[in-house]
Length: 160
Ligand code: 4NP
Image 1 (cartoon, rainbow, N blue to C red):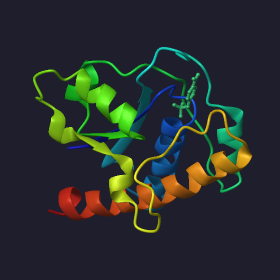
Image 2 (tube, protein in one colour):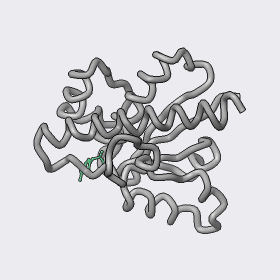
Image 3 (cartoon, helix red, strand yellow):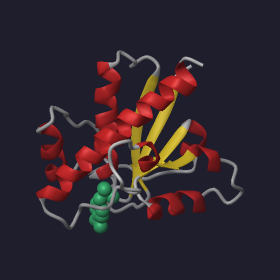
Image 4 (cartoon, helix red, strand yellow):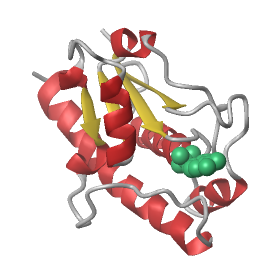
């Protein structure tokens, strides 16, 4: 069985594609491509079909992480399709839960910062109107969160 992760932000052009591609990078390094797959989506329809933000891409590339994928909107079917749905901030988290009125999938939805071990942040805040430094910070934070997440998945799912 393949374990499926979905990363979610607002536009799906900055934070969630960064999380998806960082996680894929870590999964490749750990040779777990057959066991874990990743995707990302936005709660909004603002950027459907758009490529990732070039500021986010360049911040990731400076750490050797390349981007793949185009923006799409979160949809109802994603609740069924994915094992874990990781929201970047509180607003994304609440917007996802609002689409699950019967609370059937609540346990699948988490804030990605639950998995950080080296940062005090509880959310990955929107860098869209910030400078390059904000984008660099997002990558640092997501690297921390994705490393923690991968470790948890390995402990609790893959080898249990
Ligand atoms: P993201 O960033 O949610 O991390 O992809 C944003 C992208 C676009 C907008 C806001 C946040 N926007 O308002 O268009």
